[in-house]
Length: 63
Image (cartoon, one colour):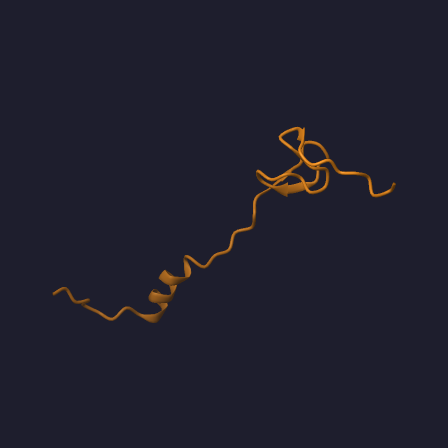
């Protein structure tokens, strides 16, 4: 049966384990209609547009 020749040091072990714990920031894009940053492939929460088309009609809150 195969057995490790030497003990793996804690530093080497922890470096191997730490590579999966990195967090990445979500990728944001500018809305083509209003210019506000939104998540990719999502309807813009500010104006309700996606891919140049109005998906959700947003009424002005000033009325």
